[in-house]
Length: 194
Image (cartoon, rainbow, N blue to C red):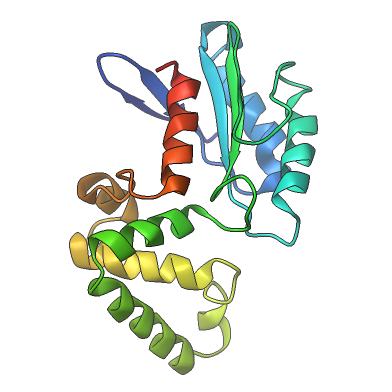
């Protein structure tokens, strides 16, 4: 059974449980609550990509309806945090209104932090897309495929041989550069009670 990843510092402990798609939220939340009883939690938050055909508001409304069966208090809009003994909230990436993913925010950072490298990575991905065929293109053709590949190229240059997660952590990809990143940071701060 998959279990959350745990992170902590002197002030807060965070458990992150990765979900493999919209249909898995109920099962994943149920698994998480089996490991972490709700009475021991201060907050439950969800970051939701919007790389599907559905509008971000529709994805939020559908997810909220599912979540209410497990935790009875969720805000009525994405990006908000319900206060109470258990803070809850859903942030729909990249900005609660637009289609996109975490990679959209990362590319905003790349444009500011590595402006010479971003066009090189985009060119590399475009050239690779033109030369790959068949099944090798499957992931690249997904709605966020090109952005994910571009972010991965930059991450590999910054931290060769390491995962993009290591580069995000080591290289400050999510340092607050843009209003959309600031909105995400504000949401996370409210969620953890800062």
